[in-house]
Image (cartoon, rainbow, N blue to C red; front, top):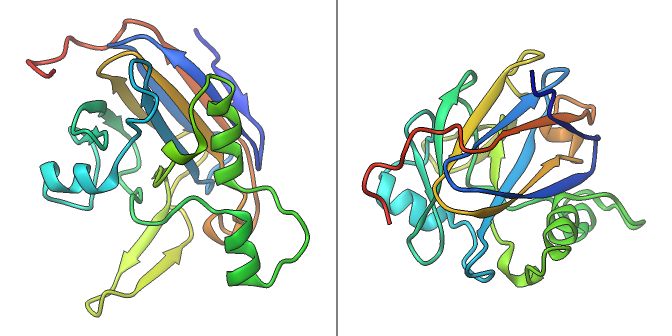
Length: 205
């Protein structure tokens, strides 16, 4: 069995992934979130878009069957299996500025934005392409007044979410460094890529 590749705590990695491949993100120890960002190889400025995804899916709750779109309205990823059902696409990747403004941290701190831009930058992706990532396993409550609250992840060790690539993509995954989103501790994730194993795309361009 393909063991996949470990993404250590507070780090990120990126891969070139063929179309109709499966990308499985596994919570190794439980209660760990991560950021997933995708960019098509034929247009390195056409990154993942939460707004377009909300437009076409008409929901902020994404799970099995949901399609994640690019800023130019192209399907990039489809969730084909979801053992958790709780993810977020509202919060921006944690950044050095977030730690400084939100938590008063003045020294350099590992963060998802730097990890995403660095790993994708190795493939030539401009830093400006990386905007809002899909936050796997992140448990966010939306109040009636519009307020957002971050709750501990609901994932148990070994649970996963699997995406199908809808075209050739550069896919980056981080193991989030923000311990407030991870039940108080940063842990690794595992990514298992199975090339060409996804069912054919149903009429999508």
